[in-house]
Image 1 (cartoon, helix red, strand yellow):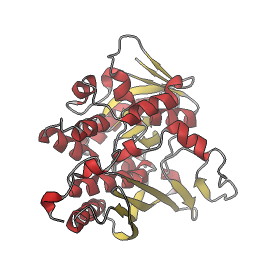
Image 2: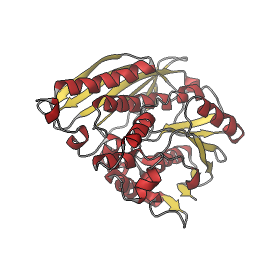
Image 3: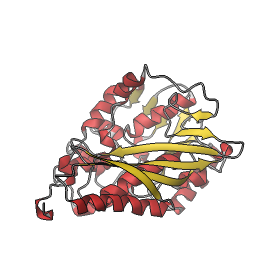
Image 4: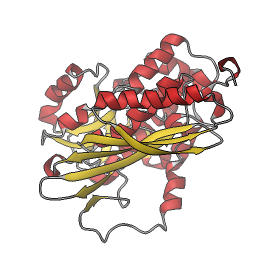
Length: 348
């Protein structure tokens, strides 16, 4: 097959990026009867928690973090697809406060549909992000599949005192989001050829920006909880933080950072199917203030592929922490709300 006959990557997938994730309520039903790994005292974080990665304590000084993440393409550039998928997988290590040390590739490709050099570009893109993170792609596994799939299993290390979970937020804590929302909305526009190259470039730049700031912030005891915002949207991952922390979150809609055209495109109806599934799964725990735009729900549930970190930080450290994050290369980082007494999420 020649390159001119090769199909667009995004057209080979029924969904793209973290929009492929199973809806939260469906996932909970599937996992409900699965055995929990509660009999292993060294397993500090496992499948009993809705956290970003598993954590195994080796000794008093070292914990191993393990995670895996993979999905189908939401862009047509194969090198960019590999970079986005790799950054998204490595993010789980940073969200736990850890330092990644190596990765294994997960590859499923329609071998008789895509040119082999296209598949090679996907792998090269993933390897380039791993190089930016300072880790090798040390191996992996590949299959011939109907749809293109790529991702990584990633191993990292963290000291017990620097381990950060999605729980731990306290009422009064400030909430910081490090990247703009709208990746799923942009990907929906890409599938319909409705996003210009500037928009595509903006989305790729955001999705390939490593969340390494999580590793640095975890050394600060005033940073109490961290999670990355991916397929369940800011509301879904915010609810996981609220539940794990035993508190509520209050978000300010106007304070949420957005990609440049996210509001415009959401208002025009460029929304992924995952957005509706997300709301159906957890909307009962969310209160939206009257007067928000009609498309606010779409933005709040928008699945983020390699999105930013949601960070709960002691209120007295909010300003200095935000300044530190922005200085580290996250210009859209913003204080988006606070933790409060109660349960669920309120958006004003």
